[in-house]
Amino acid sequence: MSAELSGQTNLSMILEFWSAAHFRVGRANGGRFAPASGRPVLSTLSVISVIDDDASVRAATTNLLSSHGYMVHTFASAEDFLRSAQPDDSLCVVADVQMPGMSGLDLLSHVRGRGNDVPFIFITAFPDESVRARALKVGAICFLAKPFAGPVLVGCIESALNRRRGGADR
Image (cartoon, rainbow, N blue to C red; front, top):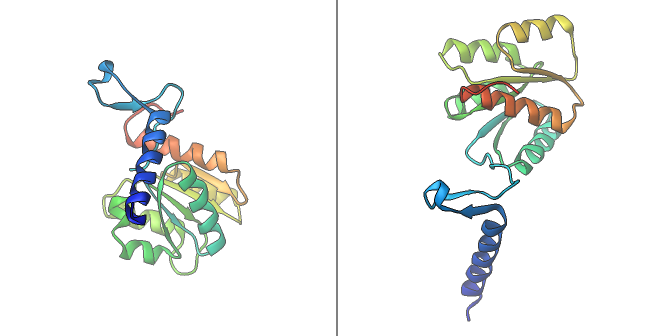
């Protein structure tokens, strides 16, 4: 057996095991895959854009969100984000408030000016009540002070995605 075929076989076995552990096929769902009992639905199609001038924050946030099944795109600046395809493809934006060039709040205003209602979650190392109030007034879903707990950010993202889908807030 060639190494390539052996690798494909091993991958097939891994995927088959993972599918069996995480999904079930049944008549109730038309013979389609559905999450196995007690398993969360992975958000692999949920693209989250993370915008922060601090590379370590981008890396840590990417690791956290990827571990929860999200597809993450990172940007070192608001301008980089705006030059990308992500403003239209993101289901949620996590942005630093204070960045060189365009701030997170200015980015939100710019994105809204384009008619895009993507949910924003702000993170900041310099929490200020007046900035927090302004961010929430213009539509931010959450405003988190760094360092923040991973589950809190994930909860904010889940809330944002739920609102975007038209569901009730948690």
